[in-house]
Amino acid sequence: MSDQKIRILQAIRYRTKSRQVQDGEMNMSVMITRLSAVAVRVPLATPVLAPQLKISFRDYLLVMLECSDNSRGIGFSYIGTGGGKSTAAVFDEFVLQNVLGADPTNPEAISKKLKFATRIQGRGGIVANAFSALDIALWDRNSRAAGLPLAQMINPDAKKVVPAYASGGYLNGEYRPAELEREIKSALDAGFASIKLKCAFGSQQDDIDRVKTARRFMGDKTNLMLDAYNRWTRVEDALPSVMAYQDVHPYWVEDPFEPDMTEELSDLNRQVGAVLATGEFYFSPAAFQAMATRKAVGVFQAEAPRCGGITDWLKIADIAQANGIEFSPCWFHDLHVHLVAASPAAKFVEYFPTRDILNFAELIDRPVIARDGEIAVPQEPGVGFDFIMDAVEKYALAPAITGTFDTPTLVQAAAI
Image (cartoon, rainbow, N blue to C red):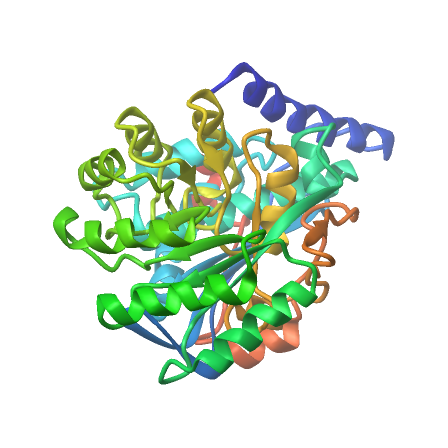
């Protein structure tokens, strides 16, 4: 971890505890006394098609924590089209027994303890999702306790506004050029200078025709990002399409391969002129370091709610900056607006103009809104929003899993 990030983590503890002293609290020790997690399944208003996948609903894990000083925080993770209850089970079995009673101002120590606890079971997938949601709750709690927006908690010189790109290009059935034109026109009218569309649908020729049609609709001055959604498993299969995409001058070509195919990414990157982007399905800083070492991509896209939380997201930002790699995270613009604002290597926030795709907005009370292609960083302490508990109850897959720091069997967690 860089000296800058070490100072940031030290600042969390200093600012939080300084705030407690200002509030007249004499006890400098704070412990996590209550943790809750609930898996929810939120249906899409209209099912959509991505390459190789139909999406009708999305599962999320929502985390709430409380501390001995009455401070609190929230965290969350997107699990996918299934897996919510399994992720909650990970939280139940590993997070509760290892985190209750711990010091919330030391997320790095908590992260290390959880990773050690799952060294046999594995640290990716739903395990990483559960741990990421907790880590976000810790950072939210710490920035709320310090009275600072999350962006300023991380970096006092954080930007106030960040650029966003409009993300879409899903299908609701058969491809219809008029629908694509309406979607692109709506994004342009809303002030977006960058638009991302799903690609790699159907035959190669149909796909290329659709991409060229999109470029014609948006003109030459708009950044066009293309997302292949892990379509290919071999370089020789990806190469013809990625080469053909060059005719529309894409800003990047995203996720040509399935996750962890670093060698294939590196090989493809050597053969094409396109900037490759990936990372939303990667779960650790080590995976991004491997891509940087192999010169596999030009853009990292790590999601804090999946890659280990904010603690590990900042490490990935360090890797990006050290290697001259752009960092534009996927999903969760309500959270990533803070991280992009605070990180020199970060550039864009992905923004979904419609709730029909990323429906996390159904669960929170103050979703951020892009205006003229930009998002203003919320200035409320923490992440800047709370869960709508009526919505959480409506979409819950099962009752919340809750633990409290009130039994002798949990005392060992306080050693963190």
